[in-house]
Image (cartoon, rainbow, N blue to C red; front, side, top):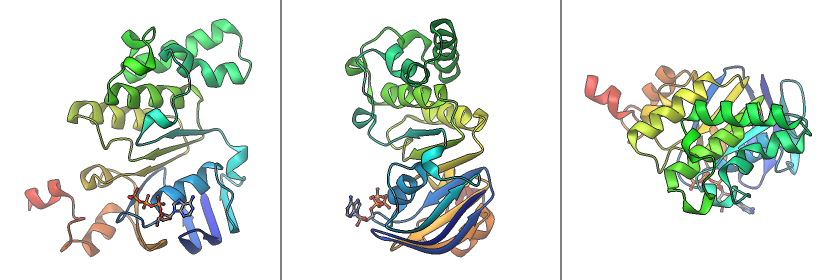
Length: 223
Ligand SMILES: Nc1ncnc2c1ncn2[C@@H]1O[C@H](COP(=O)(O)OP(=O)(O)OP(=O)(O)O)[C@@H](O)[C@H]1O
C-alpha cells in the first residue's frame, strides 16, 4: 500500500492518495510532477510538507530500484558487471552470492553477453537494460521507472515490460509517455499541475481521456 497525505513539495499538491495496486502507471503532461512524485516515493527526496508511506514505512527505509530515462546519469561504474554488482556489494553479500545475483539479473534482462563490457561503450537501450538489471539485483520492494522505455525499440521495450512484471517488487510505479504501456497497468494516475487529476483502472481513467491524445493507440485501433 502507498499512502500519501498532505503532500506539498515543489509542484506537488496531493492531499490524500491511497494506492494498493502493484503496477501503477503515472502519466500526464510534461512538468506535471511525475518525476517529482517518483523521487519522493524513492526516498531520494524528502517532502517539504506531508507524509509518504509505502508498505507502512518511510521510502528511505525500503529497498528501492530506480531506472531513469537517462541511464548515463545513474550508472556509476565503468564495467557492466560492477554496476549490477554494486548493490549486493554495498550490502556486503559474499562474493559467490554476488556473482549469482549478477548473473541471474543479467540473464533475466537478457544482457548476459554484456557483463564484461564497459558501460561507456553500450548503446542507449543497452544502458537502460543494464540499469534495469542493476535495479533488479537489489531485489527491490519498490521499483520506480521514470520513462525508462522512452528510447527503446519495440522488442527491447517489451522485454523491459516482461522483466518488470516478473519482478517480486510489491509496487511498481512506472512513469511513461506510452499510453499503450500504461494501459497494461493495474492502476493509472493522471497528473496535471502537480495534482492527481484522475486515478483508477486503465479502463476508468482512459474513458475520461477518450477524446484526448492520451487515449491508448491500441485501444483506438481496436475501436
Ligand atoms: N529540483 C527542483 N527544484 C525546483 N523545481 C523543480 C525541481 N525539479 C523539478 N522542478 C519543477 O517541478 C515541475 C515538475 O517537474 P517533473 O520533472 O516532476 O515533471 P514531469 O511530469 O516528470 O515532466 P516531464 O514529463 O517533462 O519529465 C517542473 O516545472 C520542474 O521545473
